[in-house]
Structure formats: C-alpha cells, structure tokens
Length: 136
Image 1 (cartoon, rainbow, N blue to C red):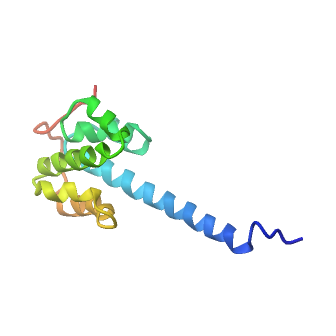
Image 2 (image 1 turned 180 degrees about the horizontal axis):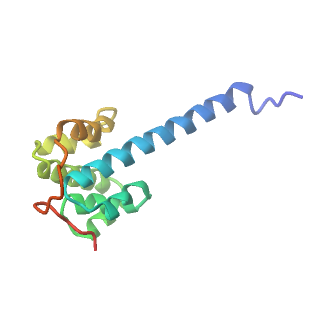
C-alpha cells in the first residue's frame, strides 16, 4: 500500500541530505585539523576538530583566545560576530588578511574559506615551536 504522507522520492531526498551533511562535516573537520597543526597546535589536541563542541574550543585555541569565547557561539546573533572574530584571528596567525577569515560567516562563500586557508598556507616542515600552543 502506498502511503500518501511519505512519497517514494522523499526517502531518496533525505539520504542525499544525510550524505551531503556527512561530507560537509568531514571537510570542515579535516580542514580545521590541518589548520590547527599549521598553527603549531599539537596533534594530540588537533583531533578535537572531529568532535562536536570540542571543535569550537579548538577554534578558540587557534585564535589564541580564552575558552569562554566559545560561550558566545551559543547566543543568537552574537554567534555570527564571535565566529567571524575567531576565524579572522586564526587567519591573521596564518599570515592572511583577517577579512578572509571573517568571510566564513558569509552564506555559500564561507564554506570555502577553511579550504582556501589550507591550500594557501605552507605546511610546517619538522617540529616547530614558534607557534606551539598546547591546549589545556
């Protein structure tokens, strides 16, 4: 029997959104982990990019800010400014224009910013203590 409240194409549409969400999550987590490593954050702490909420804490460490900045991300409208500020600070540490990092809050363009920062920032060769930040 055909259920009129659940059309056949709806299931396919839902699966496509789930796959797209997983791909997007992997992309953002991987680029944040690579950027954290390039900023000198130790690998044992850079894996926090893969954990929900812990990746926000890692972003504060990438920007060399206190942990309580992540609380602003949970406040509506304030979160846009906090995320833009943290990414602009991280891009400044990478030697890029702070407006590039702040562009992460723009619709459609913002998802490209972490990838751009990974592509245009040279990797660290060997152990580097110049920007070493250990997550407490």
